[in-house]
Image 1 (cartoon, rainbow, N blue to C red):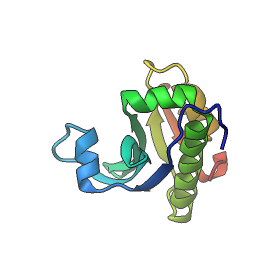
Image 2 (cartoon, helix red, strand yellow):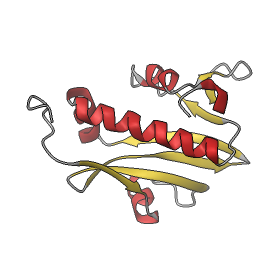
Image 3 (spheres, rainbow, N blue to C red):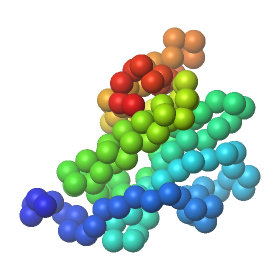
Image 4 (cartoon, one colour):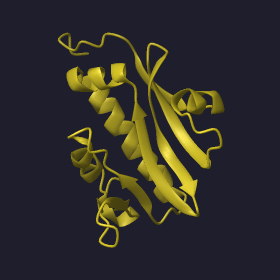
Length: 139
């Protein structure tokens, strides 16, 4: 472990429970969701996965303010986030998912860069949604 890294705790991920999802979202009735919760020493800092809405897979990640601070300062946390995202895309590919759509949150300048790094490309039909296919890479 890098001794200069500000995060000294254990970074883990696990399948999210309904309670985890409700803790991150004010939406009372969620569509079908498959998500992972990211934790540092048992404290939830991120929720990410796929929601199925109207037959489409929508990729999402929600990060707490503390989680955003960790992402800015910790190489270990950034590496864990990317590792989990890549694994999720591999699972989607293995399950036969043909497309996943995502939107880059303009409040966070690196969102677009991260989405593109994961193999998403700007969807030519919408011009604001990004689309992943199994052939785009990272899966």
